[in-house]
Figure 1 (cartoon, rainbow, N blue to C red):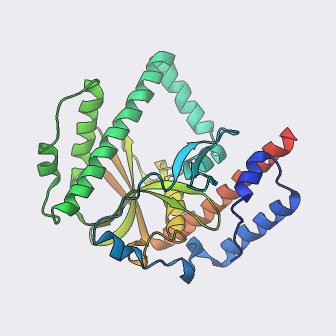
Figure 2 (cartoon, rainbow, N blue to C red; figure 1 turned 135 degrees about the horizontal axis):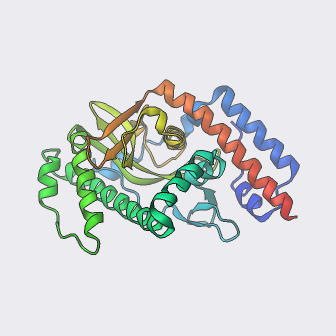
Length: 311
């Protein structure tokens, strides 16, 4: 398939993208829709990484791709060692989402809590999410180091239980850990933990939570938290996020074929109930990949329209 030149995104940010570039991008996206699911190509299947990891789970250092805000736009981007910028999956989805439902929810919460209370709740939710994600990451790495002879209960018993600066954040993180423990107990192999990933053809990037074998199936997992029980219809853009990461995995040279998943899961943790595992088959991921491509197209049009307005 034709490759997007690495300067396309930079040109777009600097306002010098022309109509020819726009048409070429649209043509390449159409080629992807017609016949290239996940951007799979034999030349992308790297098999040299396994010997380097010596069987340990892959946890790439953040210096491979560093996330930050682009200096000339509000878009979150990943920057590689050569200074090339790649828009993040979360930014693309955020900028192209239907915000009506989110705006209504925010208005209800502000009416209930007030502006200050809403901001405080948002901050605590973010801190709690970081805390439980960190616990899960540490557990998965410990699980491998102990040859999978390690339970979530044994792991959490070894952790520092001091509530630190925010007892409510700590308490909620522990409740979320209890919620997800039954899922973690079913992990039998850890392949990738908290790693950046980059799609070579479309040149977007993101950070995947993990690739593990859960219930005997290799899958990419995204961990989420919620204060209320969810159904698959409440996941909104989460399936598209999983599909975007899976697509990128198949074009990122750093990942050997044996760690490439064909299934995905969104795991939602709750304060007072066992976590739900929403599973996405290969067919489902392919359907969501097509939806992701539509959102990516909307994003590129939005960026080009913004730059045209500036000029």
